[in-house]
Amino acid sequence: MISYNPKDWLRFIFQFHKTDTVRQLLPLILGMGVFSWAIVYIEINYLQLSSTSYAKNITVMHSLLGFAISMLLVFRTNTAYDRWWEGRKLWGSLVNNSRNLALKMNSLLPHDDEKNRSFFKKIIPLFAVELKNHLQNEKTRLALDAQPHPEITGFDTSKHIPNQVVAVLLNKVHLLKRDQVISEYELLFINNELQSFMDICGACERIKNTPIPYSYSAFIKKFIFLYIITLPLGFALTLGYFTIPATLFISYVLASLELIAEEIEDPFGNDDNDLPMEKIAENINKNVQDILA
Image (cartoon, rainbow, N blue to C red):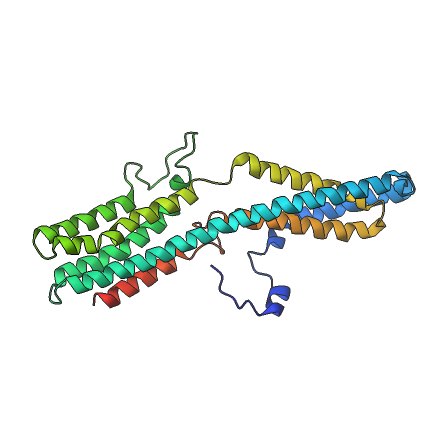
């Protein structure tokens, strides 16, 4: 995730980061510039429809379509950001629950019980690491896909790694109860944190393998394309050669909003604006080591 100062306006305006959509949309922008110039040239030199009644009708139609597409893109962007923010809240809960479990185990285990303390030092942070790897695996994204997919090298489809980590953790806790290191009441005392790990994993999987419905995503892309491709037809009747920069700017804005929504709707990937899960996992490990030291 990119770290930045939100008050540094000059940096936002004049600095171009590799995640800027202008880099991805440059071929589209150049193509629209040539297309717009061709439409304006034909209109001014040959068709000359600006003097007819069609000019006003086409302008009104584009205004209405522009309002409709802006509403769709607002909903699309908000939906994508909600998924990103929910993912961040889930990983925030994982940080809190890992700390709480470490704090509780620190108070329950004898200070000279180095063996059990070393176990929890390793196993509690391990869940965050394995959850990150699990969510970044392509197989997880395709878990609910109806179509068959080829096996991915290095991934054992017979195992769910976060499940196994929690199973080891639960087994260890119950062994401590059996050996009377902790009591039954103390087992209930840490039960919420133990249960929360798989709750967080399931919620993250829900975001990962349930994308925006295909028909909705496809409709927005088609709508944006048709609107952009017809912009020069309407603007050329009233703006002349000013149609070219106007078309390029509107095309860039609309396509950029869709690209941004595509990137943040899956917050568990490797894009620059995705969640810093590796850094969060490192912080969990550091906090747990400090607590159980």
